[in-house]
Image 1 (cartoon, rainbow, N blue to C red):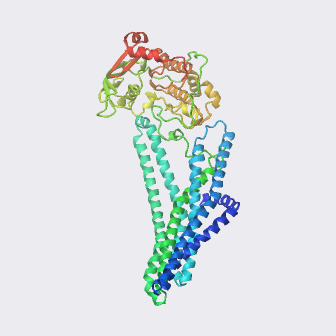
Image 2: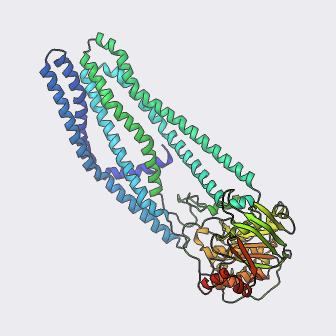
Length: 627
């Protein structure tokens, strides 16, 4: 037996013992089903031998009428079985719902800081109903096979005992072969599901951080890892298919071989003085009763049985407590519901924070506030370079050859050390611009230059040292605060440098709540605003002289945003900010307004006078409202 079966079997036996009356009631109705099976083949044999072949048509019709009555008895038996079935499956569903709710409450009480487990809704609805339906189907199928087989075998003995010599050996052999495939098949199914889930998780993580993969030159490594996972799933699928073929052989041996042997043995049986009616009755038992019941049983146990074991194991496993995995064992969690960010450190350190989705349970911005702006203080670690000169020369870009250009003939120069803000309506091309400057996108025409070189040449093989891009969705992975802040520091940084950056960007309150630089982070428990602060601290600490902030402060309140942008303005280097508020744009040296195919650059005052779009944007912005 599998470990899951061993774990569930005691509970299953206790559950069934508590419902002995229901089981006896279903057994009583099932005896009528055995009578239906018995009379079906026996009546056919008697109708042929004692009726039609003997020239007594009335007798033959009478026995066929008995077979018809047996069909009615089978219908009544089925009705009674379904009534009793409710006494099994409904208590099971109620017990599973209680177990799921109790587990969720225990986990919440044991670890209040942990984000809510949103999978509880699926367990309470879809998974409990799946377990209920699978259990009901297995009970019906197993019961039907047992009583149908009993009625059929009794009928074969009544017709001629030697028929068992032909039917029983292949039937038993096929059943034993089928039982022998159950455990290996379940293992192979689990292995295939694990391989499929791993591959899906890998593709999801790569898709979410595709810009990072390109930026850090990790395409070959990521492709190799994906190919290895694809090969692993293919091997798992082949092994699963092999055991599925063995199961098909078992079904053929148990279900088809007895019919074949009976037909081949018919001349011998007739020589042994068996009647034609007995042979036809035996064939009726095999084709109309045993074979359909056997086929249904094998399919149900092969698919529904495995599914039921997996679902029950997930529903009634012990509650997780702090420091314990999902199965109650010690060690780090291994639940498949861990966020993609938890697995992200396996990707080589990119030159920018990957664009990943927020983890489940993140419902707010965090409402981070800064009491006052910090005083300027010297950095206790090497400062970045003064900053590169960034230039766009008649750049046109579109997402596809036939697509409308997002940027058209854009010309722009950002001087070393300058602070430029970029504003414009949603979808106008602001994030596209940062992608071009970071070297993640390539223009259809025109040139992008960083200190006179294309981005790929300017950044070289280690882009993290020269430029950093922080997207709107901040990237935080499982690990310590220190690990997250040093993510873009190839040469590391001192504790004094970490503390200076934390003070500059306003990380102090968050560090105090988490427990300091060496406290471990669970990304699912952080708000989007807290994630953005950690990502901003990481970028501030990096040695890159070019910083690109793509609405990287949109989940901070205005005071926290002002403090963070003040820290970057005081930091040596070139700074380009996709502005989320008018106050952010006003802090820049210059402002670039993107308006379709047009672009205007100037100060806040100049743009209010010359740009109708900027006047509209400035009028719609609400600088006092927290986001």
